[in-house]
Figure (cartoon, rainbow, N blue to C red):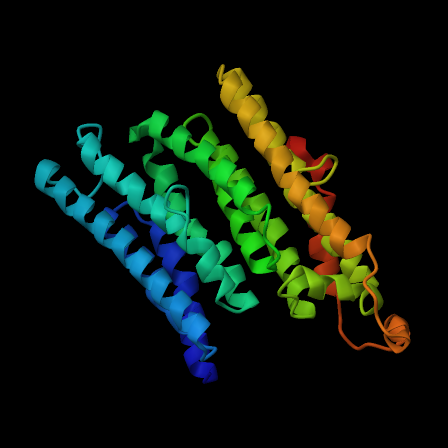
Length: 345
């Protein structure tokens, strides 16, 4: 793709969530969402094959439908109250429409079916943008209007997202689909704490992005698309395989790694608000998540697949790839738990 075109596309992708986060006018927020939607489409169809075209079509149809519902809610709210911001007097029907549309944009259950399919059909670097940066704009709108939304619906969507994110990832062999189901589960955790403490939602989002970036970087180094391709890294880049295992354990929330922090503080906050059953169910689903991450580590790191003798010496051949960024990101994504008092305060 033309470098100037790429600069314009990436600038627009960056600008979309910034516009949404910095505006108090619902129409401007919607414009920011549209910037994010339209600018990522060229990246989705950059690889000219039927799978990426299908993924781009599914993404566009889903996101355009959600945008249409949000615009309808904004217009109905303006007709009812004469203001471009949701108020206490806004109809619950309009607010529920907005919640449903934002859930579609975030890939929350029961509107999550498009996310694994779209992620599976696009390149890894575009998948990274889709699962991290593209989540910021809809989540920022939710954080601004959370006090007006029905907490029962939010919690039902949160627990179903955590359950389906954990359950859906169990039988996957494709790394991109595993990361998509991981995203659904993490979004469920963020939504579960939103009615009680939105600052913890932001903390969870920051740590989720911190964990997802090095995971995708490790996959992009050798273009690892499935579990079998990761299992061949033991003789190519053993250090990267170790980093991948640590990041996966952190994504699963195993103490004392960084990924344990959001789960710890969210469950503590839920217990303070007497949500004992919800906290218990979420902890059980976190174990299910950890199980399939551990199974992935076992099949890639702890088992040696049969290879010919020549390939067993590949790790000793000189390489010129730099792993500095990946190393720094891995340290941040696994060893920042001691900083938790500063992060929570």
